[in-house]
Amino acid sequence: MPEDVSLTTVAARAGVSISTVSRIVNGETRRASAATVARVRDAIEAVGYRPNPVGRALRRRQSQVVGMLVANLDNPAMATIASSTEAALRSAGYVMMLCDTHDRADLQDDYLSALRAQLVRGFVMVASVPSKGLADLSAEGAPMVFVTRRAPAGRGPFVGIDDRAAGAAVADRFIDEGRRAPAVAFPQQGSSATRDRVLGFLARLAERGRPAVSVIQGEGSGLSHLQVGYEAAEKIFSAGDKPDAILCVSDQIAYGVRRRALERGLDVPGDCSLVSIDGSPLNKWVAPWLVSVEIPYIAYGQEVLASLNAIWAGAPSMDRLLPYRF
Image 1 (cartoon, rainbow, N blue to C red):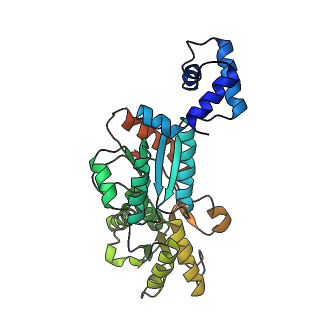
Image 2: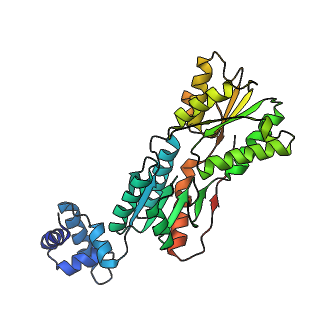
């Protein structure tokens, strides 16, 4: 029901004025007796009244709605981040509007425009891509938090892990295990996260006496990391040297790599060990053969909320780096 009609209905049922109902709905109970407050709340429950957040935002110029744009909800990691953030925002009294951009700049801009029209209080950008609308909003100082990928243009608080350090940790593991032919599989159209993981991996190998030219590298095209892994694996397995360990910069890339390995008659992890950086809880069910650097995506929500609160309070923006583990 429209908000003014609902307030009228509540007021009539409780036997009080509309202004009294409005004050109590908005948490101003000091001017009403305990009996009146109880009567109004009983009436609210009876008629099923719910405040209109958009109407309230228009009056107060302050919304309780936060928009989240996610690059690909088919990705379990991003779905976990979305779920975690929704729970954190809801516990703090906010409503989250979720949009899947499918990693497309045009869709991202369409959703940013639509959310802006709804007077959302902030934007959570999960794996955002460069786009004009995003650049314009960033330049205007819109409250934005960037998750898993850093801001494509300008600056903005980041929630994620130290991707270079994670890549370096995999390199250390390979060398400590005595791996002699390391490889890396990554997307041709990489993000800041995947690029940093590869750079950290190659740099640490070089520090420990394995220059990048000695590392087998395979890249795959397309937006699907499953396809990326499959194509990258074909390049890696077609190289002169056969790898005994491969860094896959995401779980889904590892799934694609293993599919191509099995088609070639290779045993994973017997002939070649795969290590990914993601660590989805699904792995123990669908990929027990996969070793992962586990990222605590379930904890991202509280960090996103803390970043938004800092922005709204006018505090300096800061990155929030979470721990990871094998």
